[in-house]
Amino acid sequence: MKSEVDPVMLPDPMGWLDAFGPKLPPDLLHQCSEFSLKQGQTIYRTEDPPGGIFTVLDGRIDLHWAHLSSESSLFYATGPGWWVGDLSAMSGNPRRFDLVAGRESKILRLNRATLLELVDKSSDVWSGIVRMLTATLGGAVDIMQFLSIDDPTSRTAGCLFALNVTGRGWNGTIPLSQAEIASIARISRRRTNGALAELEAAGTIKRGYGVISILDANRLRN
Image (cartoon, rainbow, N blue to C red; front, top):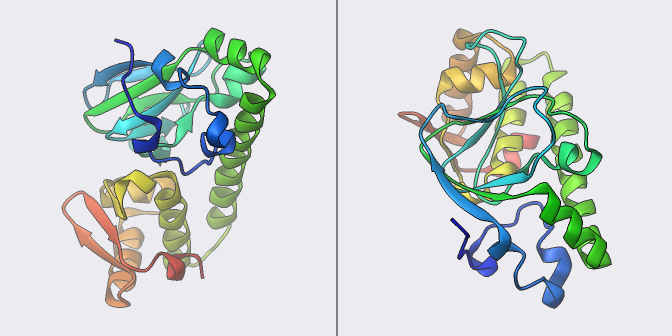
């Protein structure tokens, strides 16, 4: 189903749509297809051929390492407005990880052929793509930086900061369980629970059932 999404209503934490300013191609998002997924449904798998790029309208997209067990394969999660799949879509290389709906989700897909056609037509689109690729690389670097921290509370705080950036459309409430955060932070559930309890006691977050509310995002990075 073709999308009727208004670009103004879609969160843009990557800034790639904003890069166009008033020159945003009016049909860019309208050329996307819109579909719904149940929790756990796969969007694409590692080594699949390159295809389009995807974003969440409502729900969550999860990134998994294919070589790890299901309990520890989750390494990133994205929310409304954060696009996934751009590296393969632009390079033409096979997919590097599994992409799965982390919750019941409504997804937007821009196919690769249309994306490349838009790039050929306008340098403004290429400028937007550069912003998207930069945001993807920045997110990966942030996660690598935070995973190098030994202290479990600081590491967990950093990972929450990175997740909060990818899901601006979550409005500060990250829909991940403590077990899922443990997988992303690459530490045990016991140490993750202790870290979250410490962050909650400091007034930085508030824990709920299957969600973490961010009360002070700035303190997560410090």
